[in-house]
Image (cartoon, rainbow, N blue to C red; front, top):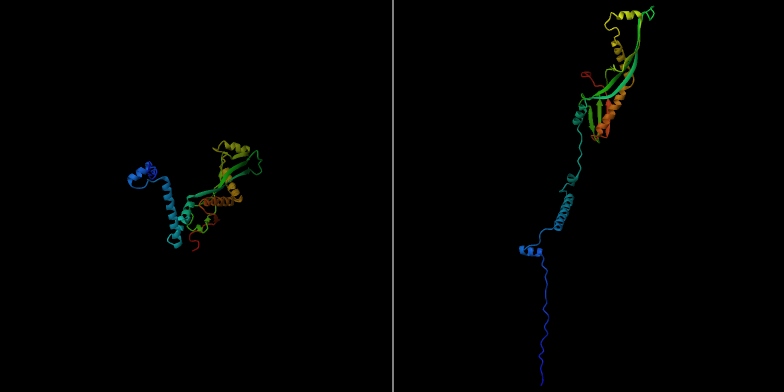
Length: 254
């Protein structure tokens, strides 16, 4: 007896597809759109924007539509003459130099034919005082300051003014005084027999003369130039010219 075996086609195992769905995918699927903005996405967006702006600037510079000099160019400030003149006038009177002097004043009050111990007076006075040399900025004329190109400036000033000699009473003294007998007797009838007023007057005159002969005015000019060079260099001036001229009196040329 023959047994027939029915041959059936072999069946294949069903294919299984596995899909991984994240939480962000679920939220995206629900909203129907892409995922939210991330830090990386923001950087990419800004980077593309910067490149686009750079391209526009280059194209604009080539075509002349955009002035890069106006955007990135530097600015230069120039000090005007009026402002600089006001700054100098605000300095007012500048004490440019001071001299300290010591002079001896000798006064001989001898009486002819009479010995010194009987009548007469000899005094030696040591005077110590000062003299100031000042420059007046307050009366500068409008044409006294000239600002040129390349940070240059020229200034015309009046010569330094020599002040009055001032004798210091704390440092000055009479170092010798000899008086005759008659002079001492006469002192009994005078309120102030040994007044030193004339000694101070003579000492002041001699100190003023010593100041004029010592080159104090020239020293004051040098100090003024150095001061102005330092002052104006802070304002940006690199070439400073200072000259001293006597002001012309009004009506002198007419």
